[in-house]
Structures are given as structure tokens and as C-alpha cells.
Length: 390
Image 1: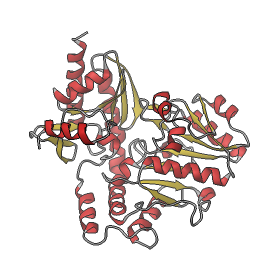
Image 2 (image 1 turned 45 degrees about the vertical axis):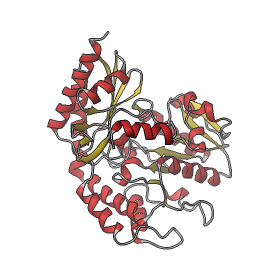
Image 3 (image 1 turned 180 degrees about the horizontal axis):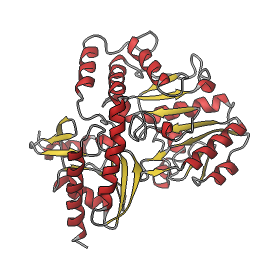
């Protein structure tokens, strides 16, 4: 089927929720993608952080193939080994409590909101400007972005939005607060790192008022910052964290991981999901975790992240570079979406724009120095070409 035919199918039968680029990808391996015409691309977006150990990682593929031939679904009314091994692995690698498996990051955040509110018998939730926690109604209510919220009001009550600074958090949290929900690094708004002083203030004020501190690590977790979980580089330990995206190795999954304080809040009947923690996706996640937790791989994330940051600063029309590890953004003085289109079509580099002036890079954690330099060269050419149009 041609690209033109696919576009017609989309116009006729798919809801218009995505502004798709004019390319059909048909195959992926490692950091590379191929389109229907056989052209090869360097993927520095990872499906918005999903394929973080590369496309079709052989360890993940083998786990999926093996499990798909054994058992694909039974429901959570029965025991299956992959889901419970995954819960144990997630808890042991982080907060030591218990885990609720979901199908997406938004669902993991919904579970976190329910746990926090049940633990406090109600109460409000404090979030900060620039946050993005998902598109389901509860997660959207925690996402203070007018363009995303406005079409779907009225939203859930009980959410307060404050600036990401210590004093604002201290003023906003009181005895009626159920939770403070934060992304240690805000991805969708342009890779903004919350300072450790903000995280420490959130921890202290939550302790003071018996509120839950929840870290949304859906994009910044799973090795993206050079530690398996982003909180591990900050010294601030939350009461719960949410994970998704890279967790499944390419398949859809989410998880709410708690520490001991929130581990037993949910009881039978409080929450559930038909598909969550199915054997195939749980095996895939276990394989992805095994690859990602490798100490040498995580050390390389920091090294290559620094190489990319330094290289981005030298590119034409770049004004500022932000990020940690391999979660990076460059503010540019030209039209960022136009640069992204040029990078895709002229340079065959996959990146994206988080706004009119910001280009985001989420490369695979498995890249090497040559691929980092190749991406910089391709992005530089796209920036230079776009800058020449001004």
C-alpha cells in the first residue's frame, strides 16, 4: 500500500488526533529505521522514549517470541509468573514497596492519584507549571496546559498548580493535600530539569503534612538520565513513582511503584485492568529491564549525553541546551518544527519539536560516539538550511 493510500485511509477512518509526518516506517533495528522506499534514518526520538534500547532488541524479541508461543493472556484473576516477577524486579530496583501494573503512563498516573487520595481519605494534588502527566481525565487535570485542558472541561477538581520553586511548594501544601506530583525532568514541555532544591522542598513539605510525594518518571526513568531511575541521581526518595514508555522495550505498559508507606493502600476491588501485566508485555519488560540496568550501559549514558550537549552548543542557531544524560533539548532561534521537518526529509534524522523554538532529542541508550556525531552533523545541516531561509 502506498503512502498516498495510507493517508487516504487515515483521512477516511482514523480520528484526526495526530499530525503525522509524510513517511511510513516499516522496519527498525538498533538506532536505525527504514521507510517503505528503503531509505535509512537515524532515530534520535525512540518513539518518544519508548525504544530506548533500540528497535527490536534481540533480547526483547526473543522474550516476546517465547512467551507469545506459550501464553498471551489469562487476566489478573489468576497467577502468571511474568507479571509477578516484573513486580518484584521493579520494587527491588527502586522503592522496595509494591507495584500496580497498567497499560500506559497515563494509567500509571491515574493509579498514583487514586492511591494518594485513598491514603489521605481525599485531598488535593499539587503540580507545577510545565507539567505533563497524561491525557486521561485525572492525568489531564494534573497537566496545567491550557491547550490540552480547554476542550475537555470541566476537569476533576482538587488540583493546584504552582511555580516549580521551593517557596511556592511550601505555601501550597497543607494538611488537606493528598500528594505532590512532579516530573524530575519535564519532558513534553521542553526538557526542564527540576532542581534538587525543589525536590528536597517537596519531600520536606510532604513529610510535614503527611502527603505523598510522587515522581512521574514515565519519560525520564529507565536509564534515560544515567541511573535506572531518575530519582536515584538526586538523593530525594519519593513515596511512589510511575514508569512507562521504555519499560516495555517497545510494547505498551505502565507501572506504579510504591515505597512501604503506600504499598498496601489498594485492596481487592479498589482498582484493576483487564490487560495490564499480561504475560507477553511482562516478559518484554523484564528483558528490557535486564538490558537497561547494565552498569556499563548506564555509565555510557552520561558520557554520551555530555558529548551530545557539547556538540549541540556548537551547532548554528542554537541558543541554549538543557537536559541530563540522553534526555536533551536545544532552544533555537529558527522555527523548530521546520528544522525537525528538514531533519527528517533532507537529513533522515528523527527528532521532534516540543514547541516553536525547542528541538528535543531522546536517542537510544545504546548509541555509540559515531552515531552521536552523525546526529549532530545531520541536525547541524538542517539548522543551517533552515537558518538560511530567514
